[in-house]
Length: 138
Image 1 (cartoon, rainbow, N blue to C red):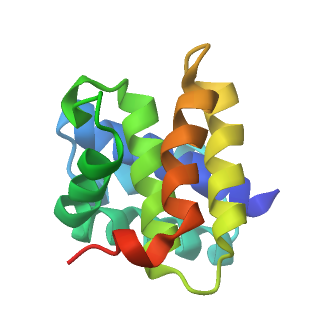
Image 2 (cartoon, rainbow, N blue to C red):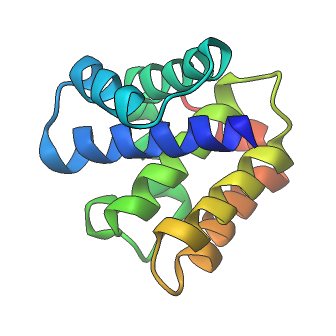
């Protein structure tokens, strides 16, 4: 459950950076004050926040390849950032099983997304999860 809370914090920060133009470090510090985590969980949250942001361009290229009918900037902001977070884990966190990354994104979408968010996110991530190597960012 603690990694789920770390992912919630990461989603909040990615959302603030994406939609509000917040500075990543300031948004992380603010979110961490509002949602206290253990040092280990905060380190995990920072890893996925700053890793996602560092690889944002290549992750978004993957999303564009997979989601033929949806332009990334027209996706709901929560959905877009959950997909980004999960794809960062899938491509760059070898210690996290792909199924865990997909499941966590789907579960967070049920809480924070719209009525169809969990199905939409599962569809996008499911395509990548079937053969992650064919979608590896360049």
